Image (cartoon, rainbow, N blue to C red; front, side, top):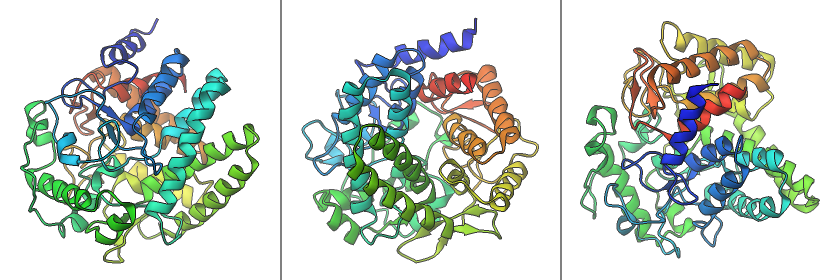
Length: 416
């Protein structure tokens, strides 16, 4: 009997707030979008009814235009900033005004394959399709195939070095007093800096002033990145959405999705940079490549069947980044100026990022590299517990503890 699996399940029970799961107590007291999708995949292994419920509760926050926000504020809490009063959105349930990587339909396909409950899958498929269309209309209005983020939080990798150049152009002035709550729960050295937070809130103020209208936001956005990690996850979501469309006899939907998938597939390939041995995002305001060395450049493994030469180059680069580390895979290249092994998204290893990379390595025939990464992740969790993320040098568990998506990742990685 694996006691770590039992503990992972206990964490999901502890973080259950009535059909939805908080990432961890106090630090993140609401339902987060991609967290819940990863958690639903964990539940799908042993409680499909609860997995469906997780996704159904998330969809309660879906906007009329199709967007599924990054936070759904089902119940009030004063342990988190920014709360509903800062976001000023108009949805029936309080939500944030931005989104997060679309892992939702990836989870839905896994859940449907586990449970086969068409009556519960279909409404969630409809929600996923609406959101998929929103991505392309709201965040790729010019039809490039790459979707843009208008706020660093939309990436899930909130204060990644990938945003440093673009974020430096965003003013630090805000209409909203910045009242940090996160540093009361977690060591400030592991969290984004105050200056970053003022810029984050400046963006929220800007979009709230647009009434959260996508066209006005696109026009006014001082931060606009065609982002490779989110686009690659969107393509994987598109593949799974197309699969479900065909399964349910939705031939018109399937054709529409297939066209979008192909456009995005080609657009991602254009972002390959052989000299860097990774893919890059593009800053749509400056027109320049985002060359910061982060995990995002490897995520296209997840959704592309790459030429052997490209896949091999990515794997060689991943090995170079991981050399001498206690835990792979670092979210920033060790040794560069932006590398901070304990600070949120500026270097730590995350179980969910590794999970995506493991699936991508397997897809592209690198099963040995996938297994090495799986073992590294599992070992870190078994040694340090279900931490939010891990210092790749020391192996120390950092950030929030008793973390839901780490628990879900562990269950999947033990099954893999």
